Image (cartoon, rainbow, N blue to C red):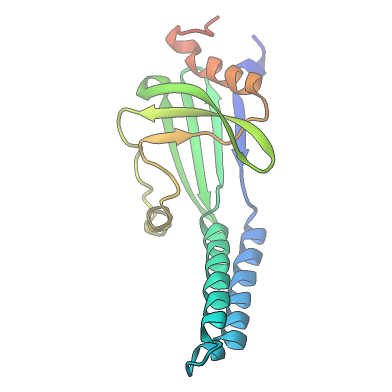
Length: 181
């Protein structure tokens, strides 16, 4: 059995400098938007609805840009026989926990919701919730953005179904389920 069959790592992340750049860009553009077009909202005139559509639409886009820069995905899964080490990061804060293959139902799911094409994920429906991060700021961000479920885990994307299935087989190997060797 090769070392590759013993441990598989998959991750998705946004580097901190890029997060800071995106957040600063979103805040700067919000200030420009409201500074330049906000004056068209008051006093009321026949052009107020036109300016309102632009300001509200632009604000929605820029606020979602800001939310993505703060709470975007930054996760690393290390799959070993019978266990997954999950590391979630937000700036300099880290939340580490382990999930056993016996903690829930594990399966490979195909996803084609992104622009980059199809991807496959290991999805685990947990019997008990994962522990909340101890760091209050990390817990607040995860709660506000509702980004990560506490009872359903979905791995970062695998580019091909075979690789995702191989990782699932490694996870289930210790339990003696399909894929055991």
